[in-house]
Length: 449
Image (cartoon, rainbow, N blue to C red):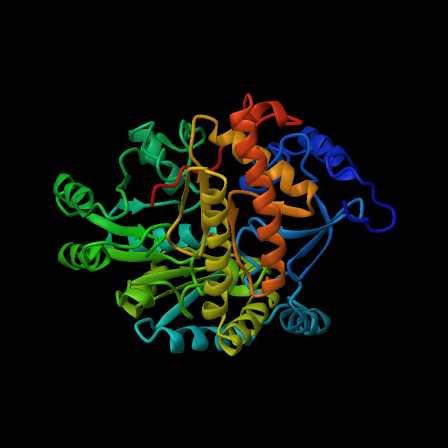
C-alpha cells in the first residue's frame, strides 16, 4: 500500500467518508441526489463516498487518500478530466464579473450560434442546466408541436413524470431501460399509456407501437447509440417511421454526446433528428443542458410555458463554450476512443488469462463489463473492493477522459490482472463471497440497448 497524504489512514474502507455517508442517509432520502453515486452501488458500508479534491483523473477522499478514477468519472460529465484548467479559467472570469443579474448573458447567444454551426440541420436552441429537465423540455416541445400526447421511447431518459409513467401501463415497462421493479409512485395516473417502450435494434417493436396507436405519436425519443451498434439500418428506419407519421425524432446525446464524434454520436451514422439533447460532457462538470432542433419544432416552446431563473446564469454557457473549444482543439473523440479501447482490452486480456468468462460493451462512450456467472454481482463487488485497496476508484463501468494517460492505463492493467486473478482463485476455492468485507453491491441500471 502506498503511503497516503498527510492526515490519512492506511485503511481505505474506514474513515470520514464512510461515517459521513451513514449520517447523510439520516438527513437526505437515499443519502444523496444521484443513484449512480450512492455508496451502495459500489461497496456498501466501505466506499469512501465523498471527495476533498479532484484534479485530472485523480480523486482525494476526506482522509487525504489519493485514487486514480477508473470508474464513472462524474457519471461521464468530465470528459476533459476533473478541474480542467482552461474551462475553470473561463468560469472564474464569469464568476468575478457576476454570474447572474437582471440582464441576460451574451454567451447564451454565442453558444447557440456555435451549436447550430456544428449541427447545420438545427436552427434554434433552448437551455436548461441538467439532463433530466432537458429531456422534459424536449418532451413538452414535441407534444406542443404535434398536438399529440403519446411518446415511444428506447433507453434511459431521466426521472420526470413523462418518462416514469411507462410503468403505469406495464409494471415491467422500464425493466430493460432503467430499473427492474420500479414503482411509479407520485406519477399522475392520468399519464397511463402516454409513454411506450421499444428495444434498440428492434424496429418491429416500434412499428407495432405505431400500428396500435394509429400513428398518433408526438415523438420518438432514444439515444442514437448506447452499448451496441445499430444494425440493419436501424436508425434510418426509425427516421423513416418518424417522417411517415409526423412524429418528432429526438436523439438523447446526454451520455454519448461529444465522445465518439464532435457534435454527437448521430453524426457517425448520418441520421439527423428533429431535436437533440446535450448535457454532461458539454460543460465538463458544470451544470448545463442544451436542446437544439429544427425551427418549426422549437418554436412550439412559445406555445407552452418553459422558463426558469437558473437557466439564465452565466457559468453554464461559459463552461460549455470553453469545453467545446478545447474538445475540438485536442480532437477529444480520437483520444477518448484510444484510451477507452485500451481499457476494454485490459478487461478482455486479463479475463482470458485467468479463465474468466466476460462480456463487455461494444460502444466506447460508456464501457461496461460483466464477469459472467451466478455470482456476477459478488464478483463485481470484490473487484471494487480489491481495486480500492490498490488505489483505484473502479467498478464494472468506465468513462474515459482526456486526463487518463497511457501510464494510468498501465497501472490499471497491472491492478486488474491481480484482481481478476484473485476472483478466479476465489471461484475455484469456495466462492467469491468469502472474500467480501461487507455487503454485496446493489444492482444499477438495467440497460439492454
